[in-house]
Length: 330
Image (tube, rainbow, N blue to C red; front, side):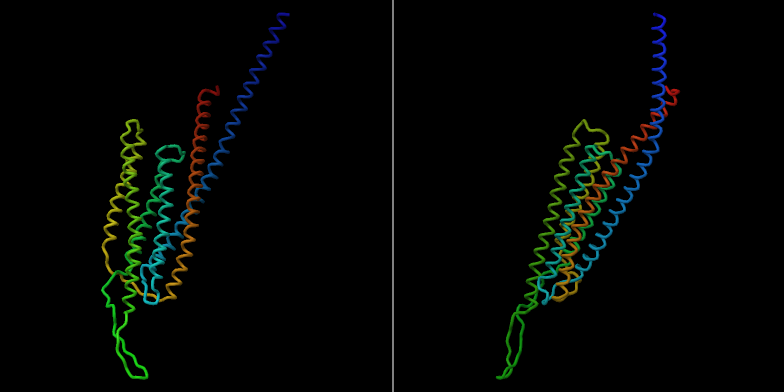
């Protein structure tokens, strides 16, 4: 009886050992088979990232080209007696549209910068820094476009208020004076110029306040003695960026105060009306394109995060298999 029990236990132990070895072999083979699957997923994610990145570039190119053409065209024209306020108002509408684009890009940039500082994203810091730099470039470009439009407004000048007129009727010829149309137009030009300068100056001053607030916060954060080397590097880089930006904004405010008569061509009522319609259409398209750019950047960040984690997973699996084989499969 004792011999039979011992034999039974030996057989059971052998079967269990064989089963465990078989399971280990199956598990090893399963792990090996996951390698090409993950590599395939990495290839798919890489292609998806390239496609989204190309979409973003094409959207930015379209926005930049259309904005550049319109800003250049508007900066070359001015109001006439026939157009009144129309051209000036169209330019102000364009300036406000550029302001909105700047705010959208700054909001997106802030979210990226916060993610970089907190280190919660799986995306490599170099990629996030590249995206931040990309948004900074567009903010600066749109501010320069605002200044270009601002400088194109007709400046106040000394215009004779009354002009002599002559006429005739059944009683003969007569002489008199009347209010000069050019003087009336000068009043309109002065009004729109004052309005737009206030708009642009307010936008620049808002940017200055924002920079000063960020600089103060960054300097405070850098006083933390528990920061990692990476965190310190991010904070110092951001501090340098915003200090440079602050100095540039202050120079741009000073630049705005220099009023020189622009080299522009007067347009009539019909041309001004067409310009207004074109700018309204462009502003609508611009907002839709910027919303799409923001969405695409979110998609890009999500895909980059997935790719980063897939590569980490692949590396970990390869390392496990390498160590397993070094140990002789034990």
